[in-house]
Amino acid sequence: MEIRDVVRGFVAGLAGLGFVLIFLFAQTGLVSPPVLLAMGGITIVALFAAGGRPAIRRLTGHEETTTDETGETDWWLARVEPALEDSWNAWSDLVLSVSLGAVGIGSFVLLVTSSSDDPPLGLLITGFLGINGALISLAFALE
Image (cartoon, rainbow, N blue to C red; front, side, top):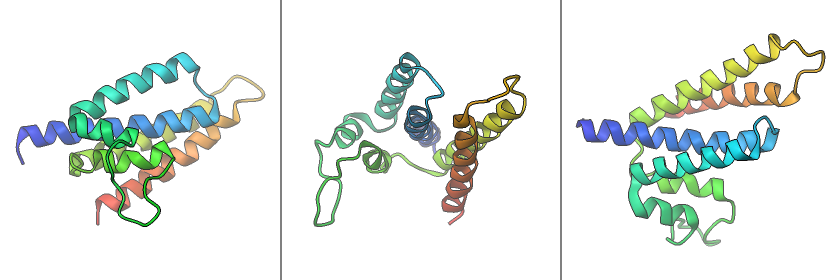
């Protein structure tokens, strides 16, 4: 494997992680909208670095990516996988699995060490989804 493939896979993993975290944090309300926008910008840059213009076009729905009868999906998160498909490799799986595991464990640590009597429920949700996402990502990586 060339160094170019390693870097491209690493950046693709970061882009995939960014999209998952944007969705997760938007649903749980753990971060403010300006932070979500900054994460979105960085994630789009990582997607462009990993897959170029075709990846951006697939994400925005301007390129046909599905082969079923229903055509394109309207959910933006479902279009992330086809956008990253060309640049995804074992390094991407490693980045996604380790990072989701770290987010899950970090959420549980923040939940346990919270000085508030009523810690945010979003930390519990993020912890469970982070750990489960890491395990599922690891299972697909080992296939």
